Image (cartoon, rainbow over all chains, first blue to last red; front, side, top):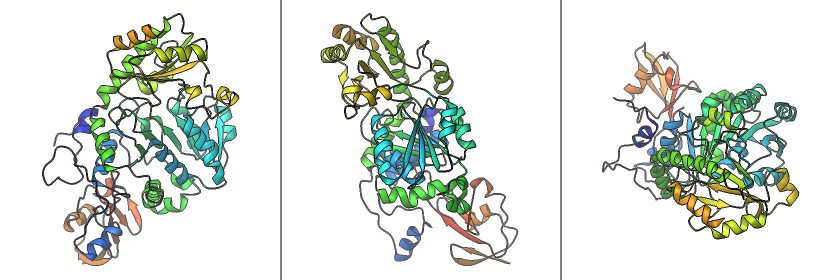
Amino acid sequence: MLKPGGFSTRIIHTPFAKEDVNRALHQPIYSNAAFDFESAEQMEQAFQGRLPVHAYSRISNPTVENLELRIKQITGALHVTALSSGMAAISNVIFLLASSGSNIIASRHLFGNTYVFFDSTIREFGIETRFCDLTNAEEVQANMDVRTVALFVETITNPQLEVVDLQFLSELSHKNGVPLVADSTLTPPNVFQAMSHGVDIEVISSTKCISGGATSVGGLIVDYGTFDWSKSAKLAPLAKKFGPFAFNYKLRREIFRNLGACLSPFAAYLQSLGLETLQLRFEKAATNCLELAEFLEKIPQITAVNYPGKEGSEFYEVSKRQFGNFPGAMLTFDFASREACFAFLNKLQLIKRATNVYDNKTLIIHPASTIYCDMDRETRASLHVGESSLRLSAGIEEVDDLKNDILQAL
Amino acid sequence: MATIKVNGKDQQYELPLTLIELIKKNNVAQPEMVSVQLNGEFLLSEKFGTTQLKDGDEIEFLYFMGGGSRC
């Protein structure tokens, strides 16, 4: 049988796990909670994992499984788990890998909720996070010890737009017996192949471009089966029996089912549909983003423009190497003051004032007064969140309409 | 004849017998999704065709529902 090779073809033609009785062309939405069994014996076998049937939708569901299979198809992963949000994906991975007394190395530049999760939520469970400059190998190495259970990185940090050399970090991490966990939300699988850059566990907020342009909230854990789990104090006993499947076994048989952050079948349907047009939409949005970056740079009132895909960016080369011609669809730019930012925001007509990224609509936000409003000015400064910076997520509109909106708002 | 325990039940087979042949003889449901434990250890699917079974082996056919599923 012809084996599809293209990114979109592979998504669109991923077979269902089981043939649909009505030969539907899209996986139907199974919104039920539980599934019936033919006999007590079949039920027993299903609970023992000896039959390929679903039992309860918190644990597995045909519509959700179809999304997971499609992601597996395009990433080459060993296993994919879909969850209720990107933060659920991060928290499931960290609760799986870490215990009281262990520590995590993370970038000092993180998405706001992720930063608070590391800095506060898990600290209360006795898990320490050591925030480092991940572009400084000596600093990262100096902070790793025998209790380090993960190196956590965002492929493009939000909103600083820093890009780290993942291959280099992967080698450093593996040398220390630590898995590399990467949040690749800003660089979806059509532009970033995580496994080829040494990522062991990938987490994605599928709410963003995968969902079809912010149609629903969801998250993904992509396990590449590349890490030797015998090096993990927590997973070593499972690694003896399950080898590269130890992470997946612990996730599906314990952490994921017990934390209960499952994706709803309706959201899975929307995200599966969105995935089919991911490549088309993302390439358009990233192209718009580069054109807007070059446009904004020529406007005198704007004092700085940051986009890793723009020549002259300190991250241009590493972005090109890791993400090709489409290094994200998000940029930041600065005015002289916070007041100037607010005045500009208030005059926009097409571009939406909203907190999400990778909607089909272009979105804009002043991060310091919103996402980071619970932090004091000094903490924001330490995270390089500028007081006079705006973050813009490019949509898929015609770029001239976006330029006209910017011009009239100046 | 060799005795091989499959999902907890003794079965008789002529040797030589590979794991992939055992999967076919047992009409294992969704063979592209099944994970196999041989004497308590999971096998990579690439090894199914070359793994020769022997008398006394214990085989478990298992499924991780969701997620792409095969060990």
